[in-house]
Amino acid sequence: MSMKVNDDGKFFGRVVAAFAGALPVLLVGSVVWWADARTADQKAAESIVRIEKRMDTVEAEAKEARMSAAADRQKTAELAGDVRNVLRSTARIEALLDRMMMVQPPTPSRP
Image (tube, rainbow, N blue to C red; front, side, top):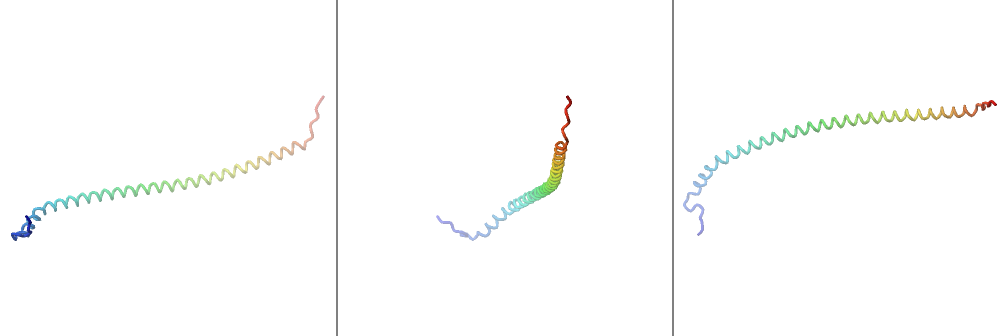
């Protein structure tokens, strides 16, 4: 048995009636979907703002750490230079002491 569309001439009336019944459901569904989408968008925007703030904080901390590390490297270089100077001075003093000890005549021993 084959179905014939609009066999009795009431096709458009039936379509209009079907859409009229479905229209409130579609409207309510679209309003609910829109509200959910809006809420999700707001939550996503808030999350993005929190992430951006955290990234700014992390970048600021990293910049501060780099500056602190650079200052520490500078201090370490200065200390290393000071240690080299002290070692050179100590070596010079030792050399002078060695020369002074060799130049002096030995003290006579008493019988």
